[in-house]
Length: 477
Image (tube, helix red, strand yellow):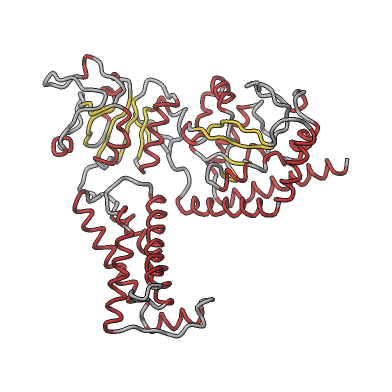
């Protein structure tokens, strides 16, 4: 990727030229005729082709509004492709709203509605690919690699295996052997290294330490890092998966030593010392469709089931004392946690972390057994899906305390963390429960390997059929 001022100049000029081009296309006679003839809501407008001073003002205002709204994207910064697309489209929309707002003031120039809508629509399509394309690194520019870990011996061991220029390494603490050649010890806050100096360093068996783990996010942005190699003594939640999460958020590739492949998803069956971590199992297009499906499913569910949700809340209150909703902290992507809400099905009391079958639990209330049997206790999770904490389909989010027990008996359990948790999943439609974590994990990993929007639809249809069968059994028994 072109960095620094070059990136800013190229990205800004590209945005300006694309905006000018979009205005000229939207102002063309044929485009105006087609739009005002075949597009609903705009088919009653007259064809308006601007020229002279009017066209000049239209181009000037459009460039100022759109190019100005894209300012956050002019800074070179590692981002995932989907994040670039969503941010670019959002900023284009902001520019369009600014143009529409200006038209309401008498002292400003008002763009014709058809021209405005076509211009913003075209820019929403062409601007995101532009910023994705200029983000690519030229083939002549070497990749920037950063080693992150707390195991000095492993760092020294894997350094020769890194096939790129290495900036240095981050670690939480320093031993006697981590001092610089000058004898100056590195502080946990990191050594201030000049950009020219750090970019010229080649991979050696003794890498310079450039800071503590808390600086990872800042350094990924500052030095436009392409790849992070993890070298931790053990794959714990706080540091190992925290580093993976930072890589995922910034669109940076991650590699781990092959001994940690049981804890992460890998792209291929590599046997080399360093293997690639599959931080984004979903294809970008499928990811977009999956999120759209999640939002539509949650909105339709909340709207259609609102009376039922209210009725369930009343039944819970009348059946036993205590709150209507039950909250629990569960694990999601890269070991992070979130609070999931369900309708309360048990009498308020201290909960055991050991998974149990429903028939063995005497704390479940009368209404609660019906809710569990019909799956209606899960309805509040539609909100978690709507705000993006969960998906409709995916591995079921496990209770944090329970998951720590499961991990002891199922070493590869953490591979589930690389996919957003779901309301249902392949394990659920095959009746695999937390009381049998090995079987549940097998189904979850199979889903991760096969996942697609069409596979999700099949799982949802099967789950809805199971729900209808359970409801029918409860009603007719």
